Length: 440
Image (cartoon, rainbow, N blue to C red; front, side, top):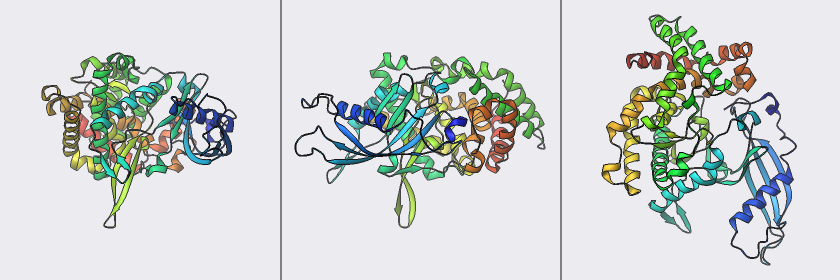
């Protein structure tokens, strides 16, 4: 989630233009009709209109620049009945920052193979409901029409707004019902990934490991972790009866890499899933309906698959809880929510044909959550202040402002003054201290 200084402009770089959209659309159409003998791969569309608009504000996405593109095009190499027919489509174009793309991620293989196979796995066993000509089933992700990682890493994606999904409020966090909808989808995501790992063990094993598998890995990750803990500990030491916790926090800076590497090893997991790896509110889109005058959440879809890895369900659960769920919901419903996730996971695995003896037990899931509570610490102290910053606070939030010590101090002073952040730290750190998570 971050921007570079150059990404604040609303207009895309020169290489993202109508010709590129034409190339991406034609690649998609050719792939979709690969078996059509009339399709010889020649020039098949004309772009009539193409308008780029920034889809995210500064500071809302750290690793890429995202555009919503309105396209009107004409087919001119089609069958007689639809030749010259005009079409309109809205797409999302994700342009990954070069310094991030150079680090490598699993996103390309997730979109090209893993996610389509996970969707297929779920679709085959879904309880489909037919409404007229429409068959509904669980949707895991936005369709990827085209992607490449050569000189640049670019994704040409379905606009989920066009099918009724919209962003959630990352500033306030998710309420109880929204959280349950996300946990249902997360359980389906994890369950289908377990089936994927069983069906495609070689492909699953080839996925890049977690960011912290080898410690900090890069300067940006180190800056987020060390900078966040350092700033938070200075705030916490001023609170009555929190001096001991602040001292423990300072000690975690030295031992952070060692602890992270230990808990992130996939071989320590009681059962393995493909995690989302960055499950916070901005990477979740929700579909709502109005029932008896009340807006209720119906479904959730995840986006941004750069951080996926094979590992523990506890990572996603703890990261999501501590970056995206309202504090009062966590205080009152944490256990209930974990039970809900497990019920959905168990039910989905049954539908996928898992034998009872191979379905993880409630105790196994809870053990994974407990073992990964250090993720709660990292998410709450280092990620939450960035995740719930408002648009005014996000102005000037860049890769440089989080890695440059002088700039970082200014940014942290602003983002750590957030009331939700301070209240969550006060409650969450006390809870983690009682669980001995800070005693490294």
